[in-house]
Length: 465
Image 1: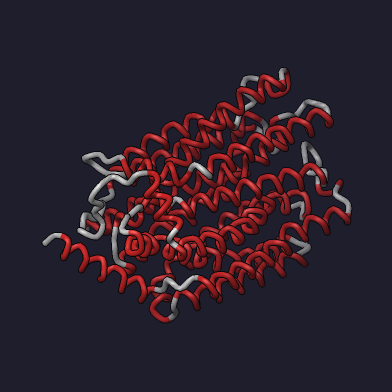
Image 2 (image 1 turned 60 degrees about the vertical axis):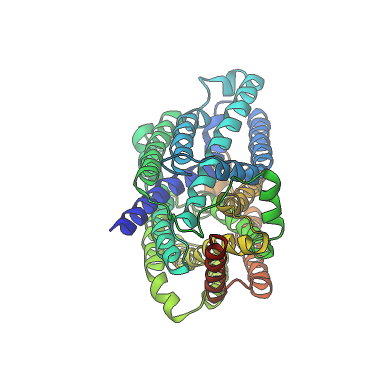
């Protein structure tokens, strides 16, 4: 019952966490390009969009290099209740409050005083993103601490991925409805965006406090560090963990393509297919297929090894991109999304589990255990991919004229083709490269991890004698 309670609470936390991440990664640029500078001249709008995109990108890239340090900080600070709960709850609160300012025109400054707006925005976004990142590291760092066995982690990761899949896709499901409701019309405005962000921020807070207060960390000898880790030990652990580094490198390539695809999908429906009203079905399909995919993972993993699941998943994703490339109507595009979202959660599950298992791999190689710092690598890669994906999204939107009140009728055929190549062809190529690196370099299988855990347990018992 306690294990179920922890797994369920962690899944609820993942629901809110990915809803919030989806809002940040998928909709901030849309807000900036469509509403934030509305009313200004086209030249002013283009300049300000470029400036905001630059600020966002610089902050996200600079911050991601801080992630191992932040992970080491989390690993080194313990409380009586939990290593992770205070960070998750506290940083969720700060980021939720600041998100309302990030998704605002700062009381009209965006159009009345551009330089002042950019200065204040840069400060607010920096604090906002660092607080979000600390919470992100703490949340995913908690996964290895909840169980030391591959099977146990698989169950918890399944709950987490169900929550994150439903949460992330719920944003797309409610996007048009909520913005229309709060805007008072189908022409979205600042009031609509504020209502939308307020709702997502509240969901994130509920999930964060559930994960912080209702989970129970494993206190086994393998999982219990003898001392606080110094920053130098953190980097030593990461640098010598070749399996972690290969997994991170390959996943970085995949995440880059995935973020381009995910960020530009809403533009695809709005400016290419002229079907923004169909966008809600993307969220609905994502919730349904993602749920089926993740619920099926424990059963699938009984018959297929992780490497076999990875091959199948990546090939299915590549197939979906091919269908997207030639889709001329929303129904075919939605069909392609069914294929994509049946496969994508399985790929993500394998990545999360391999990185989680690399905690013990690194511990065996270096003698030091760093859950949060090791687990921070996957969010760091996601954030880097998201940052670069944001740059690509901003560039595509402005260069192809997908800003302000532009409609699908205003987009020429040449822009349509360019958009499709960037959104579907490039991610497909990157997915195949990811698979090649994973298959040739990542050797940390389920059986290998079980051997490592047993060896660590023996070492711990011998050390205690």
